Length: 172
Image 1: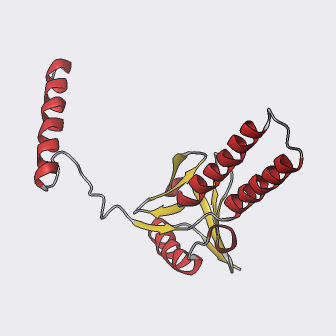
Image 2 (image 1 turned 120 degrees about the vertical axis):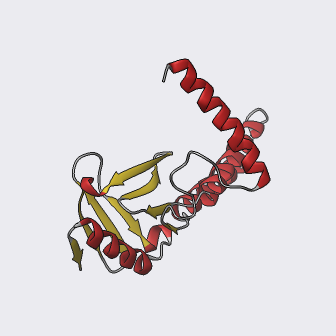
């Protein structure tokens, strides 16, 4: 097909999918559905928000103690921004999504994916799960203490993932 024809087809497909979505029908031209994409394990960040709230309280108390006429507004703006940042971090849930042959998580403000071929081994510890990758970046650590993951269920699902994709699993 020529490029202009491909553009017309993709444009018409997107319009048709918008109409089908409004009607509650499944979209055309997609190979996977969102529901069967894999298991998702969600946690909750609470350590960094607590530190940010403590800093906001500290800066607020220091602002009150050294109250000067010109700096009070900027001080309260800074305190409120620390509190807003703590709320935003608390509400964004960290996750591990386990698919057929990929793992994905949210790191450094992007969704990162690892295929089964990029994983060297999986360590299942008492309160955490460590996924060691071969090349890029560091290990992925999912901890019950820091991010409140259900590490027991996560470990069981990752064992199944490792069996299917021939990845060594270590228990400690």
